[in-house]
Length: 149
Image (cartoon, rainbow, N blue to C red; front, side):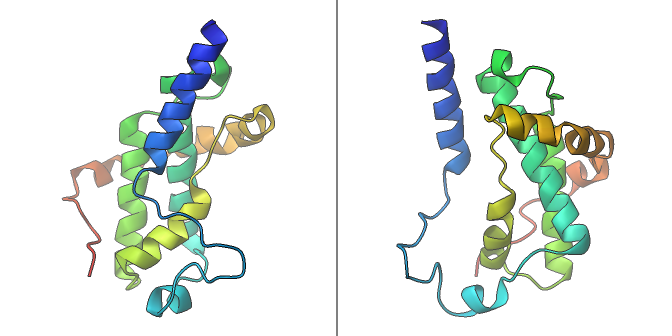
């Protein structure tokens, strides 16, 4: 019974994390049209690093909140950790002239689900680095950094 409750809580946390995301496009259809589809590309450099750390710290935070017994030895990130990394990524994106819609498309692949034991194990080292290097100065940045058009 306890396992079932943990699964339900984890499912609810994952559903909350997905709030505001658009559903994937049907097979054979473009995910978006216009400048977002043409200009989103793939995150690189400092933006990719910030997005990776955002995804890992967010995944850790929600897994520890929803199912601490499942988290095992996975380092525990805080809400402040993943918010700081998000602000860092948004600041870099803004400096690069990336719109909010483009940013969201770039960020989606980094939204990390750490439910799988293999994924958790593979993420431990990088997650430790992300937690140790949180750009805490980004917590004082006025948000939202990127705004819709």
